[in-house]
Length: 231
Image 1 (cartoon, one colour):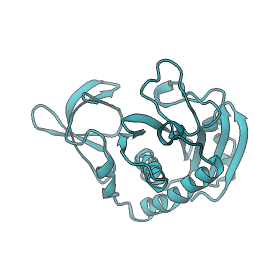
Image 2 (cartoon, rainbow, N blue to C red; image 1 turned 180 degrees about the vertical axis):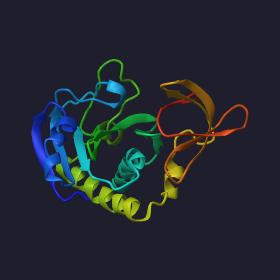
Image 3 (tube, rainbow, N blue to C red; image 1 turned 60 degrees about the vertical axis):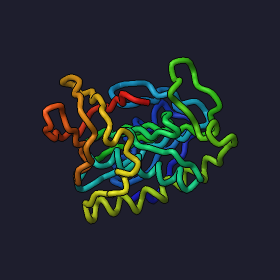
Image 4 (cartoon, one colour; image 1 turned 90 degrees about the horizontal axis):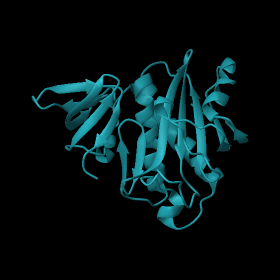
């Protein structure tokens, strides 16, 4: 459970900075106003201008490492609902969409016996560079600025009980299905072994994605990028 938030004005990456606190064996959050070399999954860069929340959670989960990305995404969904937003969805396994545009990205990296979960939330950002037409921010959607410290504290407050529930009971949060983008739709799942086409069927109790392929077989996936065919 996160009991401490360590704040910086600027770091190279909150993911890398969080590693410096591994030796203390405490679950902590590392946040920064800016990142010089923010990154997303599969080595992609993450635009990190002032006005966003850039946060890494240093966790020591006893089990269910693969569930953490979706748990973090669900946390952001509930936070955005608390702030009055609607039309929120989760693009498995790690993106949060607001009005069908990406507002939050999540990256989880195993480091020794820990898991570092990075969350990048676009908040007080009024425009994005070319190539990020499918991105949005809370400011763009709501037409106002937000208190970053208040929002950061709210994220931790929402994450902690969900994380504790996952560790204690290991149960699926069934409500996640209500927010799953593409449920029942034909999608492409991009994996290291290639592209698999199918229909999003369910999320299993271990939070893996279940796809029904063209033969009707249900296939299980723990990693990959879902690409929706209809937007």
